[in-house]
Length: 221
Image 1 (cartoon, rainbow, N blue to C red):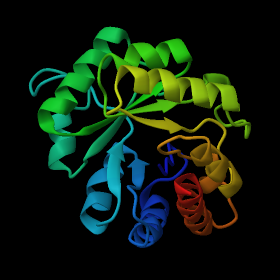
Image 2: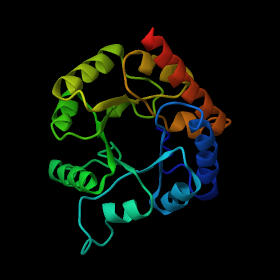
Image 3: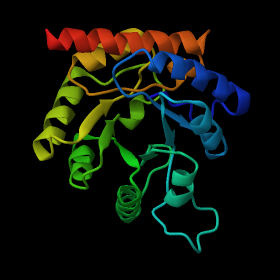
């Protein structure tokens, strides 16, 4: 998952998405790309290999809801996945349930963030498509989750539902971090600052995608 958060907008996020789309066409796994709401339709229209992902979605129907973001609007804009409950946009349990249910009804993939092992287990009971495990205190620090956290969250989530994919993403800043995380058994990973603050963000995306490929091949041996 390439997650520019609010670092990039307009032409800058568009340029990165176009480069990422080209590289994504060369790999055999899904590549998610998040953006702010105002950029989502353009990115969906101009890319073909990325899963364009909203950074949040409210679980409300069309009607009243001034300032909220509806799944219907995201769906019409070409969005096919949504991230929920990020540490920078946490949800109450009721809000999270409503958003997951609405996304499922529309057919939007849910990527739900979890801080601790306990939170990951609780979220797994809601049956999202993907759980993104990242201790809040490690986000943006350059320090990745330790092996025990990765292995424990992978194990606990899969024990509840083997259908839920597990992403591990805290502190990912380099291709080496990506390789390590996938090699430890995660289904996927993601990055923000390591990409957007790189000297050449598009090259970093290319190298991180290659690291996923390399780690996956290692796991298959």
